[in-house]
Image (cartoon, rainbow, N blue to C red; front, side, top):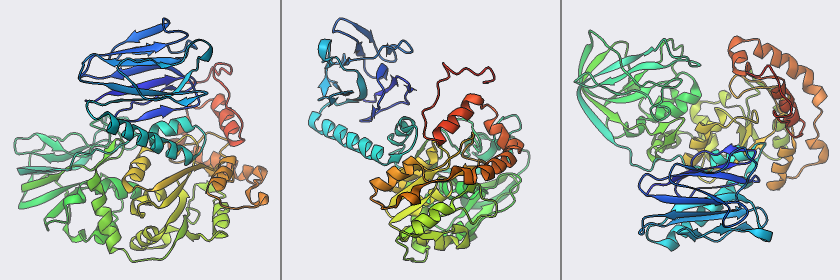
Length: 543
């Protein structure tokens, strides 16, 4: 029985959807609920000041109020099917988590003991009530454990994101199409995206489009390929081949997305057809050589018909979900990589020719003093990079392609990610973390006092209050002078680099919607101050 729900909290707004045993728990107060269940009739009540002061609704209906300043002090949720029970519990601002309630019982307080709700958990238990409640407790522990690893601004947004499971637990399958055509990629001209939307992929013997590259559950977004195109002539190759998807040029996408159909490539020696984006300048074949399949990769320049095309399920949709089989190519690479002996490492970007960071050397110096080996990955072969990371029990790096190397970590390793800006929630990284099952710390340690963005931005690193909280939590000792930061020393360099960067049209477009309130709030966050409200500070230039 599938039940999905979301909640509206004061100052936060609507959360994303929850299902299974997932929950929310914030410092803010619950204002409304929306529960969706197609297979069950339900009755939901949200109570205010007394048992007679409530609002009521059914599946898909908003129960509560939004923007009126009223918060809920109790809820009751009931299945109208006798054989089904909906369980729920609430977190109250003063007394914490309640016991489990079910079948329309009121969970909450009224009158003198009235407390607002600041968290809620809802799930269905058709049979084994004890087992279901145990799973709910496990999910609560997981949620609290994630929360303890966050040393960042805007915890609520990250918690919504990190505590949701993105794993598709269905087994990956293989389909076979006879006398099918594989089309090279071409760009769809009329799609307004950052890079491109493609058409191409596999066409079956009837002319029907079968598969290309999905990135967000069938939605046409940047770098996706969800349709074919008409063609007159095609080459003929009387062989069975594996459709391997797209071979991306950017290493981060190659490392993640280009692996998503290769999980079945090791059980036979068929050629693997991969598609190249138009205008690609460089093909990095090292990753395929490490897997032992380099000589089997076939890139098409024209539509080609094959005797049989084996189409493996896509095990990673970068902005949506992953399957367990996505681990297989990385396991092959780990097995082939040389064995290294680095227990604690810091992965740096400061050695790059055109680095986007300022003062990353601070982290290098700080962690080197504490026994970490500083690694600039580009100075090693890919196999050596993988061997170094797989050997380490403690890895620290900034958010981006470097943090994607969690794919090669030992299970349970500590992996610290320093966010390059304090507004980015990078879903692909969460998928990687969950797939790898590593212990991930997130730390905001930048003084970006002007608006920026994760891709193409400029980042000023330094020891923020969050960095010090992280060190304390991990019991990493330091002297106070080691965590002092002289902003004036770097401010002019930051301003010059920021100006030069955002004079580039592509980068400028990414922040062109920012106004003076965004600038003030960027400064407030960098200086550890509270953000200002748009209700009080109104900018007429806001788009």
